[in-house]
Image (cartoon, rainbow, N blue to C red; front, side, top):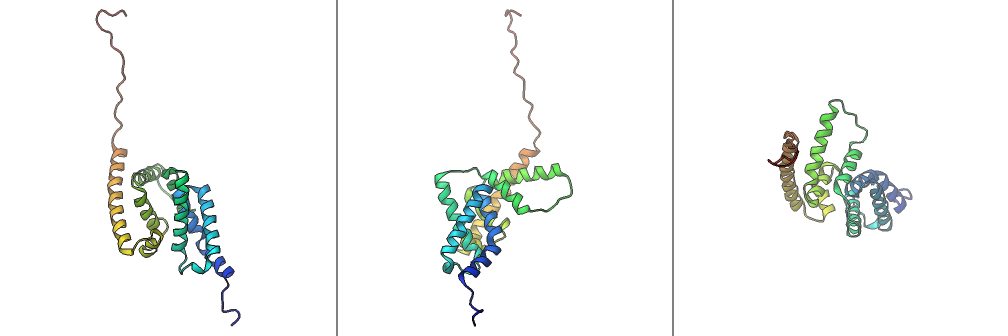
Length: 193
């Protein structure tokens, strides 16, 4: 029976090993890599102090803690989302290698990030929790502090707004650049040459 009970230290180690990369990715998607590392460290400090409060699975709870820490940080110092989203996408992509037209990939990525950046913070968060962080609707709802039904409605609406934003961003990328007319002063009659 002695080995059957898992100590807090053992459970913390297991939770840390399982969840650290995903908490880091989530925090980084919100505030960038450097600050994301700090938020992740603070999240696991809170987890250590509250080990007995952590439910199973632990990830949604940890992401909720990270989210609250980011909110506190944003009250003190605002950050630009696009830079964080680019870093999070790079991290989420990991070491995957792509074969194909790199210029097209860069353009597609730019259009997607432009569309994502045009959404509200709430829409961006619900979309990234599901798409980038791979949470189930129930887990994402726990992170956001809402019901699964509310999360499902928010996700549906956010996806519709993203589709419209993508269409707008793609249209602006596809539009030919407008010719900029040179403004050359014309000589008026009677004016010296």
